[in-house]
Length: 69
Image (cartoon, rainbow, N blue to C red; front, side, top):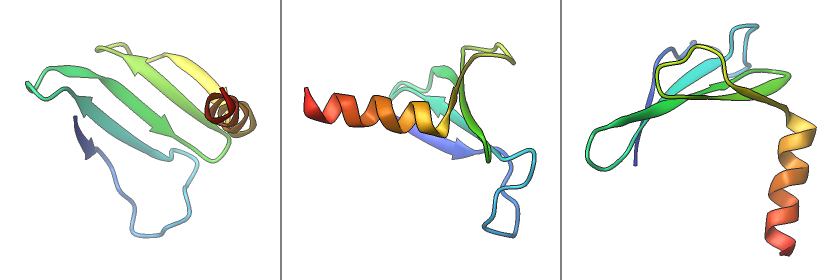
């Protein structure tokens, strides 16, 4: 996978816009974007601007449930 940052602020705290990562497969095909904010994480498949949103608590619970399986 190739992951690149679209917009990185100087401060380490996430602002209201957060950061956005471009996600590509190993062949250079754009798979989507991950938007990371203070309150949520959003996966936008392909070129769509809006995607699946999860709160940090929901995401953490999902990760923890995967590690217990």
